[in-house]
Structures are given as structure tokens and as C-alpha cells.
Image (tube, rainbow, N blue to C red):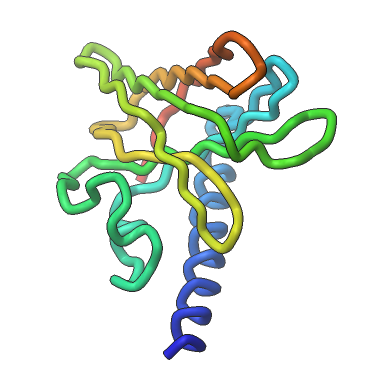
Length: 161
């Protein structure tokens, strides 16, 4: 049983990495930069259709994350990963808030919840992203003991089908 869970996690990480790589490649082709260096932090983000996340096995760590059972058509999973630029160490203790603003529609503001899968920390949550965009993604990042809040924003368009 334990071996099958480990295998499932490895498959998930491979598929998640592939999904993020494909999203990044599509974004690069669309001229979208998914990285920012702000206040000594390397901030990376990815947007993955909820259907990709929804295909994970029930035993997977993401099965119950972020109120997944409330997903609707057009829902996407925003994932943010933070690194200290000087040490290249992953930042695991941040509080991250995101606002997703579709062109001409009401914004959505949610905390990005810490997600630890196989010992690596990222932050994520689900947002409705209907159409191809553009979407403005605003991040507010607070780190204990660092004083203040770091703010940055991205413009994102979903890859055309």
C-alpha cells in the first residue's frame, strides 16, 4: 500500500511538473513572464486548469486542498513558489494573498494556502478564469521578521486552444 502511494506521488509530481512546464512554455510563446525578482525574492507562478488537478487520485495530497469540491467550469489553480534570491532557498513561512482581476469582471481575492507535497512548499488556490483574459494577478507577500508586505503583479492570458 505504501509503495503505491509513493508511486502515485511520483507520478503526480511528474504530471504537475509537466503541466507547469507546458503552461510556462505556452506563456513564453504568448510573451508572458512567469517570474519576478522583488525585494530579494524570486517569485514564480503557474496557472493550471482545475481539470488537471482534478485528475489526481483521491489519495493525493491535493485531493482536499482549497475547497476543491466547489470547482466549476473555468476554474484554474494558481500556484506560487518563492525563493530567497541570495541563498536560493525556498521560502516556506510566507503569508501570500492573491487578487485575480479579469478584464471587465469582478475581482477575486483569496489567501494562497501553503501546499507541501513531497517536502517542497508552494502556495496555491483556485480562481475562476473564464475566457483567455487578460487577467491581472496581484500578489501580496508577508514574511515573518522581514517587515512590510511585498507587492507585485503579473498579467496573464490563458493559452488559446
